[in-house]
Image (tube, rainbow, N blue to C red; front, side):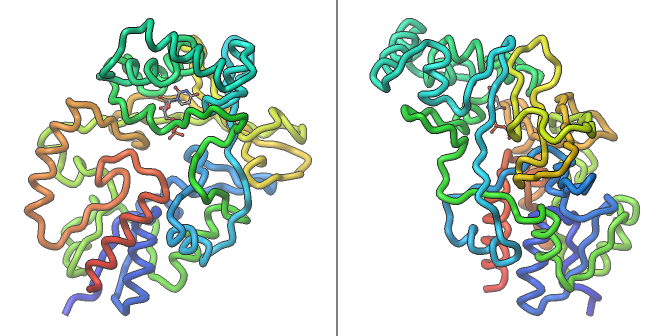
Amino acid sequence: MKQYDFLIVGAGLYGAVFAREMTDADKRCLVIDKRNNTGGNVYCDKIEGINVHSYGPHIFHTNDKSIWDYVNSFVEFNNFRYSPLADYKGHLYNLPFNMNTFYQLWGVKTPSEANEKIRDQVKKSGIIHPKNLEEQAISMVGIDIYKTLIKGYTEKQWGRKATELPQFIIKRLPVRFAFDNNYFNDKYQGIPIGGYNNLIDGLLKNIEVKTNVDFFNSREELSKQADCIIYTGKLDEFYNYQYGYLEYRSLRFDHKVLDIPNYQGVAVINSTEVEIPHTRIVEHKHFEFGVQPTTIITKEYPEEWTPGKEAYYPINDEKNNRKLKKYMELVNQENNVVFGGRLAEYRYYDMHQVIGSALKKTKSMIK
Ligand code: UDP
């Protein structure tokens, strides 16, 4: 008999949920992670008493009560509501696109005036069946908002023309004819009280975890120890990039401690001009309503992923999806490897979707 039922490669959300559920079902799990901490990209560093979202801002939201109850069973969540601003040429606009934004841009005060403005612009654009992100965006909000708040941000973020990007990316954002700056439509939203590490620590409680262990440094030896591998790393790396690289966007973070209590008065300000190289500035204390005497801000700079960098966003355009299909043929031949999470499934998942996917998988396997 092997030492473990499951070797879980990666201690991010997918791996941690999988390990929790299987441990609770009396399975023997070993979780490994190449980083020296658990949590994957939800991991926070605590600096000056502030939880710093070291791998980019994470705001938990879901419409699914069972997922909300699940995460709250490990740590209580606060009532944070994500309401970022966008800075375009020195002017601030509310996000997501809502009556406040329309008022700031056009001076329109009523939903019918705003609606008419957008309808006119959409009509003028002549777009009926949008085929890419640019056309999708214009057909949702018209040309003014596209040019001011979408085009620059999107092209920096993805390093590609908006006409070369898939539509689904912009459909993530609500368009709302109400004075309501809540970025998400979901019923449940918040940040774990005390930070995301509390969620991960709760999930991994009493489970064997080895950090600083890179699966690819001792793949054979590690694989022998378990009946089944749960792999949450990059899909193409698992197959030694045999069909070539899947493309990802990476990020560079410039963190700064400032000797003032409040820098920008909000958790996130997006910078939507293409000439400004960062996409957003995050002021971490606002996620937890912090009142510390200092503050920490992070400028986020998108860049193309190259070997050695962290992969953050899969680029699900046609070219990469074709490559993904080929990798999926290999995946479908595996008997005792499960691929889960943003990197291994090569999908632009939110946290609640990762958790949902891990819960679904464990449920079906336990059955
Ligand atoms: N987006 C934009 N302007 C903004 C914010 C978002 O054009 O001010 C577009 C951009 O293409 C981005 C996508 O909407 O990649 C999804 O944004 P979201 O905030 O969901 O991105 P994430 O927080 O996952 O990076």
